[in-house]
Length: 186
Image (cartoon, rainbow, N blue to C red; front, side, top):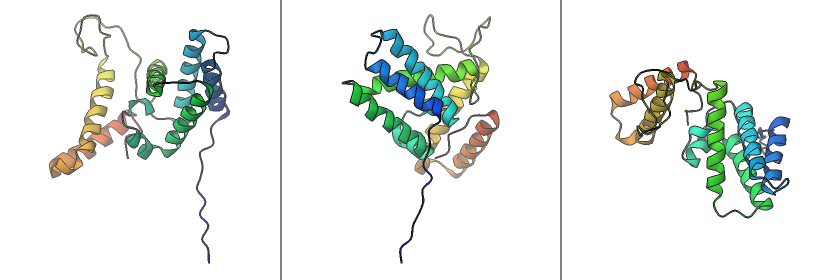
């Protein structure tokens, strides 16, 4: 007796496939301009936001991302393989890092996943790095970035977390979800 299991495979949207193909065409040097690769990669990042609906660009660890969304990890692998097939690249993580940055910028601009567009404010506010000329963060951006980072840190150190810490982490996850931040559960 054999058992047949069917896995639901992610089917990329037409917009995602078109954006991926645009990024790959730009990588081949079609048009010859670096700016075209920039624009194509920005379009691809926005298509990833639309297709997957979570803040994928916040994940620093590929294993965490794969746990959060195996479908997204599959799309990333597809992109890596196709990119390497059309262009010799010594550091693919640099290209993917750029795409992640474009995804984050798109999410901020369109206020996706709990992100809020950067707003110029008067007076003192938190800055991203604290240095001169740093971009100012809104209170909503501060909450989004710092509390997401805190949750991820608490999730990585589960074995060292006290019972009270685990309760706090659960409450923090619930608060982040209520705030509209998704994709944190592993």
